[in-house]
Length: 448
Image (cartoon, rainbow, N blue to C red; front, side, top):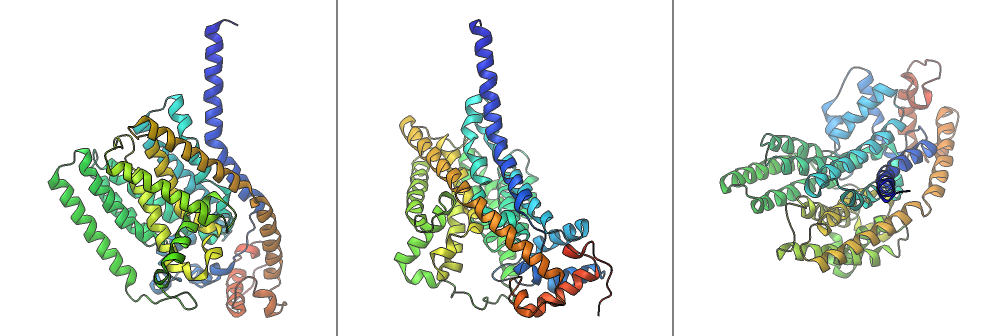
């Protein structure tokens, strides 16, 4: 074969391989849900069922919609779950697929920023490959197989959307208004959604390096601070510390344990071993610190990595909130899979920054670190996650059978669904009345 056609064939094969590597994580995570998801309300979801019952009666009590759930104000997720319940007769798998879709949108937004900053050449696309593998990691299997966790994916998505709107408001100022709206939505999606305000403020301050006028920057910054203050006031209005949870700020009293816990949260996406997480997290923290120092010293081309520093900061803020709120439960609790989603943005930011470092040697070192972390995340993604999926499918299938027979089983059998069997029975009455979830195909039953 002549050299020209051979080069074209090689180039086509490389482009095809890069595209396959980009979309494979989406198919793998979708298939994971398809294989192991079971439609049954589980644990916290039973506290949502009373609102669902009111919704089906044509009511939408504001107090149930905005009431505090643990440390969170989950107004937006409740609205989304109500809409999905109406569309699917409360098939909780719809919430799982919605979470998957939100993670895919996050990847798309990262790629849009990457393409605008770095380009769409083969080398540029290849450099982006680690991001979808980490964002869509199976290491967050709880968030993929538990519909209730849609709030985590929603908060993660709205954070990235907010940063995207702030970035693009440079040329389309009206998007700053959208950023304020999505930031408010992020706040009322999950507890760590609060980090959107300091993260967004940081990004606004960094825009000064990109040529924004001082008057426009000051107006945007003041408006942002005012919007954040209002949202925080609403969030903490009537706030009560959750019963049975560790004392807030308690972990700060023990600096050594606090640092280990912080490292454990940061290392969580890159290992399935809770004992290794603090060690790996310390390396991750050192890596992120190195990126921040390089940026502070002018070693970062801001035009090529507009979201890098805000994304890194968001993960550090999220890790701090997780440790402050849940650190008293210990490292095993801090390294459960549901927290992986919240600290992954830092990896995306580090990858973007690594491509924008001006010094060639430093850039090479950081790119090696990024690919090494990505390899660890991919290994963790498959290390025990399929056995965990099979185990969860078996457990949830058993709970599904128990729920269908809820009138005849003892309370002890219902405590696997939720700690309060009376709440489960009342909720099951609602589900059966409106033929929801496991009762979709059951004969109509009037409420007692």
